[in-house]
Length: 352
Image (cartoon, rainbow, N blue to C red):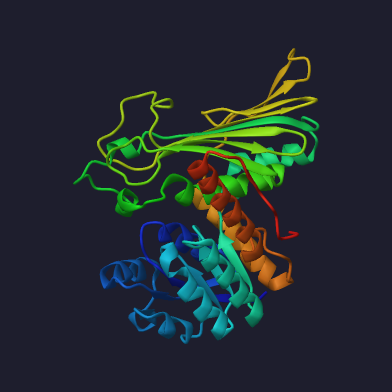
């Protein structure tokens, strides 16, 4: 089994998840790190045992350090530069979401990797979380039969607590002109496509509730499929899941629920993580799983393991650049719908 030397650029808050997963994988070796902030770079290098000689401030030095894989964990504005540099160097790429700041950038990144014959996958971990892996298995087993309706809810009381001066894990959220569906939309739309396939059209209404952010922090979307309709009700500015007084420390506290109605029954993911199956007649409720969690660290282990397995086997990535390009198109359609107050068709371009 090949051991892949991993180079990671971007040693900020979320990089911890990536670094822990690489450290735990038997066929990966954390080889080199890069970051513009020398303080963050030094701290992560010491934590994960990377010598100073393999710590860099420039992408060019990282790419020439002997790495086999580039893991990009920086903000989306830098992704095109780094993807194109790695493609030119012939190094496979794992790129954090949001994939790109614009659809044009996403198209250019996919094109550059394709032209260079370089493998490109996007770090989309939500589909690898325990509740959605469980729901996917149940749907493949035909637990509810043909789908009739889906209701997907994400709730967090987050942005109204982002007052100036309050420490935040990702303070740049305050200044993003597109916030909730740019930052979290990649998760939700990828999970939706993974579970239910591609919609034919999307209608969206967005709101900005908190005075402390520039972009939208709440929204509802209707997703029209050929034979069913789905609703996304997503908010970082709702108290609906607050069951005890919030802490002084401000950070994400995601709660997600899902209801999948089918001809043969209904699957329910509850706020506590329980997964229930309600029979066709409603006369029986089965506890499929008593508890699931949004296990982010484990999801990265699964995702990054999948990435290396695909490099070894030649299998297509679950979230290849081409696949995520269509997710980016879907997010773009949602913003267009929210702006125009019209339903927007979604035209899938990729066959994966």
